[in-house]
Length: 317
Image (cartoon, rainbow, N blue to C red; front, side, top):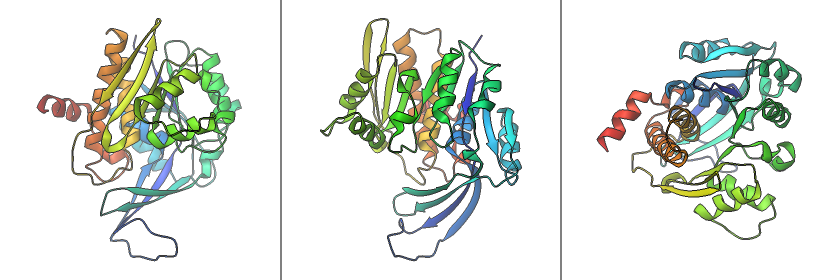
């Protein structure tokens, strides 16, 4: 039986402003477009899991102004039975998207994302165990304790520590992490927090992080326009991976990383009968294609492609 994915993650309402460029300190500018959409790294990743064919359950708290977000996720095949409404405002993301480059700048208001407790999580984990996956980001309260509870129950853990904050190594026990997915800036920050004093890039930084945590199976580092690198180990063997980026016309990078995470794990689980390192290679390539499609579209959840779209794009390469 294919393992279940429990995403213990955030809900946001995204308010996006299309601007000529990312606003500078002291600058005032007009936005040419304004959108309100469902988002949040947790919810975005759950949408990516669902569209990639994953058996996905989303746990967490949403606000009394975000029932429509929960309904949208359920409509797209995400099991929302472990999500609860709280009598307060939902978390929000205020997003600037540059019309020049497609880059973005985000301000977060936590709202109900900071009402998560380990006590609530105990009940959720009663429905999950060995063979299942716990997915987390860094947008909720008590995330480290929730991770510990999941690992104790025997779940494998995929951690995407974004947004990466100072002291994250104290808040989360990275020895509970099975697979770590970070972008190049997050990777460097983690390396420095671990005591690294030099600039390390690409596969070298993936190796440095993997070597720090003996129980970790793999580290994936996304490099934006330069593609993806990763290093994994299994049964005493190690393997390195390099996946080049696809050159596409970028409109909005907002959910590119979330799309990558969702497709990576869904594909990794789907390919469970393959040899271990082959599974990793399949997952990296599918996730890379999916995120390259997402950046060509505006929005967060709306930009995540379907599995059929990704499969077709891979056939046409």
